[in-house]
Image (cartoon, rainbow, N blue to C red; front, top):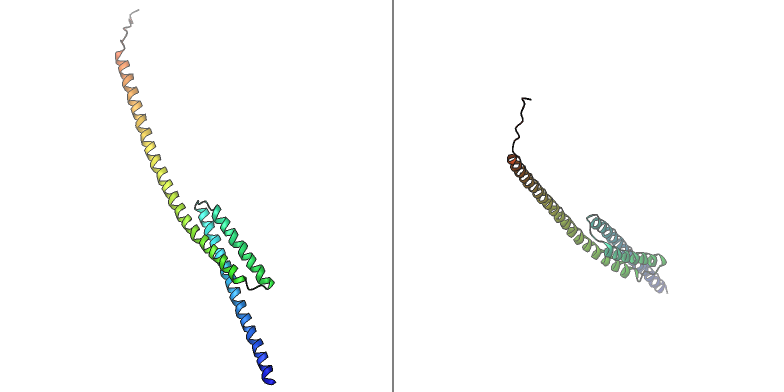
Length: 161
């Protein structure tokens, strides 16, 4: 009889350790998902600052946030069976958003740098063309004016009267 009591108590302690281990795993998976979501948000913000179109990334980030919120609600309601799968799904989406936003940021930075160089080059070319056209017009005007001036006949004025 005492052996049966020890076996029942031992199995209850063992099940508490399993529940505790499972709770630690779910808590860890939730923390990983929240961390991935924070990192993805920062990456999307940096991509937006670089000039990228982050509309699609924000939609995916919003989806990941909703899944994390659903996982937290399930955790707090005691439904730990689905918490890990929801948290892993949210982490996967957040990591994908993070990767895409890093690529978008790099592409946006390269595009803005190319745009800056093109603007500088066309500005310099435009200034040179404008300066040369002004020089051409001035020389043409000077030539026409000089010919006109040389073609005039001087009038003789009599100062004796």
